[in-house]
Amino acid sequence: MKLKRSGRMVDLTTYLLQHPHQLIPLSYFVERYESAKSSISEDLAIIKEHFEQYGYGRIITVPGAAGGVKFLPGISEKEAEHIISALVEQLEDPSRILPGGYLYVTDIIGNPHLVNQLGRLFASSFSSRKIDVVMTIATKGIPLAYAVAAHLNVPVVIVRSDSRVTEGSTVSINYVSGSTKRIQTMALARRSIKQGANVLIIDDFMKAGGTIKGMISIISEFQANLAGIGVLVEAQEVSERLVDDYVSLARLSEVNERENRIEVTPGNYFQDKGE
Amino acid sequence: MKLKRSGRMVDLTTYLLQHPHQLIPLSYFVERYESAKSSISEDLAIIKEHFEQYGYGRIITVPGAAGGVKFLPGISEKEAEHIISALVEQLEDPSRILPGGYLYVTDIIGNPHLVNQLGRLFASSFSSRKIDVVMTIATKGIPLAYAVAAHLNVPVVIVRSDSRVTEGSTVSINYVSGSTKRIQTMALARRSIKQGANVLIIDDFMKAGGTIKGMISIISEFQANLAGIGVLVEAQEVSERLVDDYVSLARLSEVNERENRIEVTPGNYFQDKGE
Image 1: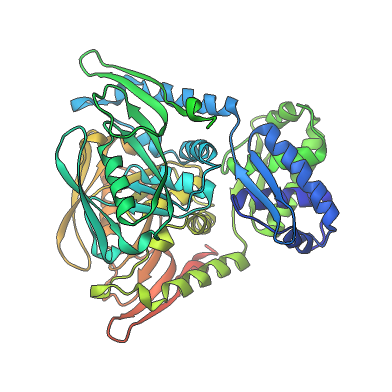
Image 2: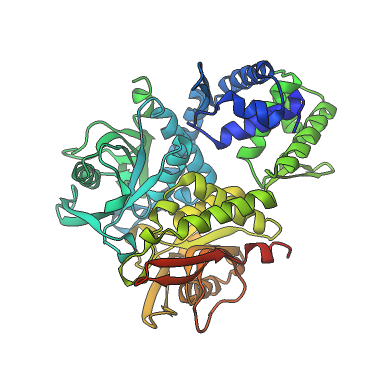
């Protein structure tokens, strides 16, 4: 239907937000709004300006017959700092300490608005890399992996510690947990990753990195490529880290069960931002 | 910063989409855009009109000093039909049949854009009910539960079939699986649901309903209330259904392993829509 500029602004903004990392030909909008291409281009220039101003992300215009417009979700430095410092503060609450020095983070991972923001942080951080699929391991990494994948417009695959009949045939590997040194198994449905796919690993927690190393082995087993690693929280006091190149949002330096104290600092997110 | 109408349209639309089911005072936008309240009201009227026209959802204005504006995500009848018929068609692909008559749905659940749309369907269906938290059971229901919860702006709790140390103390119950008649256990972190909370159950699959009945028992164990049940796929050929009042998107009437044939029809979504 024919729309005026203000109406086009509402729908164009909504449409772009709902279709991130997807090239949309301008002709699609010309038809949708029964408006001239030049008007749509002007609309997009205004949206681009405000998206950048508010840090919602970038709008890229690809010229030519096969061209169009693409929205890449992003986040402003200020908002990223705000989210990460709020995360650090929440993690430092001593009531999170569980017996054995574990941390209760179920409520943080259970908040879809927060998870969505954390997903935007990672998607923004990896937006210039070629990513075909996001991989995580059941259970706690799943929400964050979906949030990242939604912003990157790619599918998610979930590695499991048991192989289920409902997955069809699976590829399994044995790996050594970095901290407990125990041999464990992980499995992934054979149909889930194509050869040559670029895989971004997302997980909620990394200690020595054994689980992530296991996922990297699964990726090679499928003859796919590792495109990046993102973890919500990394533990600092690790003698030998099995994984080097990753982006973390928070770093757990100490969990002192006796003194009921947790020390958390921001992760390496801002250091890796420029690459 | 001071913005013109077209700029306000971009940011207001984005802001509302990112903050569903949340009452935002008009004064917030007055400050954000350094604009008169009357201009903001006019902006909102335009957004409201286009959101309703395109079926993105409703915008509700609450008058008075404690009032403001609230966005309730929705979906047009036409888009809902389109999504459900595409889902049914995807499910009918005979290559999904696994040994034992199980179905491969990992790719459907692994598509964040689709999962997000399915979440909008459920959120729209339950938007008039009072919901404080979405509950699901690990693993396959998690993505859908998050999508629904994001559109309703409430947290998610994940019931597990094993109790993990990282959850702190848990409440466990035994339940009887409706189809296999075996006794199983499910557990939920004690901190995760408050007494009196209104809980929406979301799961990917329901056969006889034993698992969902188990989740209902957990809800009473926490002295909370059942606010609704939504399932992605229900199996039709069930002698005795343990659960009555639910919303389903698709119904599996037959999985014929020998003839390599699946029959799927739309679920009861449209029948329940009016309630």
